[in-house]
Length: 249
Ligand code: ADE
Figure 1 (cartoon, helix red, strand yellow):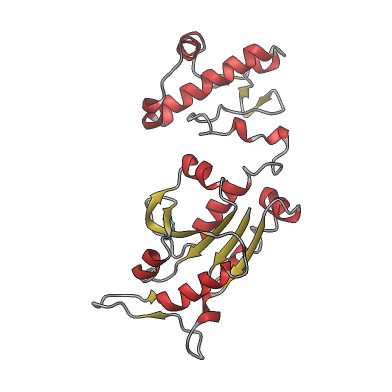
Figure 2 (cartoon, rainbow, N blue to C red; figure 1 turned 180 degrees about the vertical axis):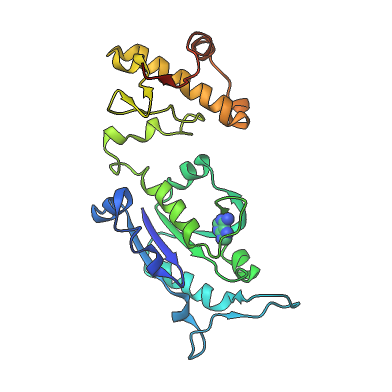
């Protein structure tokens, strides 16, 4: 997957693209990322690419012309087209399903807005897919782009080893993840659930599945309502109680 990010603040990405799972993916060439600064496409000597909004009001709006040139330059010389995304609180909500859809794309360009946003005519002209990471307003699209890139890149083949596999993730099956435990067996006045020490993989799988179902039911009743439970899942919930803290003896 090739990613291009149009941003005034490429430095914001420097730790993100060099560390952890995402950093490893870029280092191992499982994905590529580059940055374009719309100021380089300004039609004035100051690199100014924003102006006051028509109709008045506070703030500044990023201009369609230089952004368009920047986006056109991004795909120049590339045989395949780029899928253009504009990060904006007005966009469709980023959910796992959107990530799955986008992970099919080979080339993705992400436009990070600043100020009051970008001239609407750019979005129309470039037929941008507008995506929001949630119902709150950030001071710019950069953190949202990082969220999107992280969720996309970690899912690319070869990025996660099988110990970290994507299949186990929350949301992949429409359910939240089960709780996790590690050594020691007793800590902070609580014992690890006995079943996880049993070595019986079938029992452990069943327990984890039941806990995923319980967690989803309690924490995200909206998600739970969308799931059609199989007979087996219904039985698991009846048979295996919801996880609760087992006090240390
Ligand atoms: N830019 C500002 N707020 C945003 C949000 N919630 N999602 C995506 N991009 C944004």
